[in-house]
Image 1 (tube, rainbow, N blue to C red):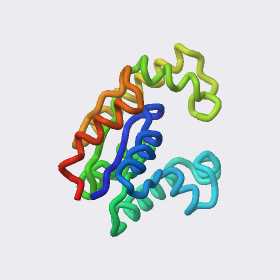
Image 2: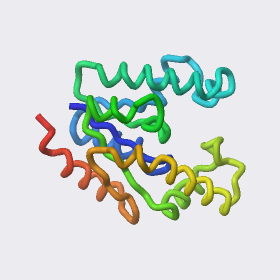
Image 3: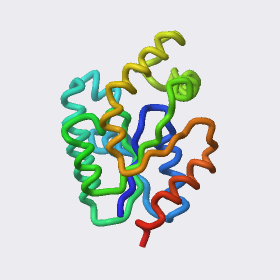
Image 4: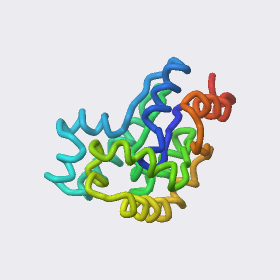
Length: 174
C-alpha cells in the first residue's frame, strides 16, 4: 500500500510523511524532491525556465511513475499536485490519501516562519498572505477533500498528528 499525504503548503506534509515512514519502516518520497532529482534543477528554476505548464506536466508524469512503483511507500506531494491533470483521481486509485487540513490562521502562522524559503509568498505582508492562503484553500478545497482521510492539523503536535494518521491507516498495513 502507498500512503499519500496532501494539503496546502505549510500543513506539514513532508514532516509527517518522514515521521510516518520512520514509524512504518517504509521508504518516503517527496514528489518535489523526486522532480528536482529527475529534472536536475530546482522547482523554482523549472518554473523560471520552462513555466508552470511544463512543471505540472512533469509533476503528473513523475507522480504516476511513483504511484506505479512496486513497493509500499509514504509519499508527500506538493500543495498544487492534487489540483491538476486528474492527479487526485490517480492518487486515490493507487494509494490511501490523507489530507492534512489546517485553517487559515494555522497555515498563515506556519508560513510566516518560512517565507524566505517559499518564493510564492516571500514578498507578501501578513494581510496579503492571509488573502493568498484563503483564496488558494477555497480554490483547492474540492480537490483536497476528495482524500480518503481528512485530518485536522490545528493546534496539534507532530506526535498527535502521527498518532492520528497511524490510527487512520492501520487497517491498510500488511
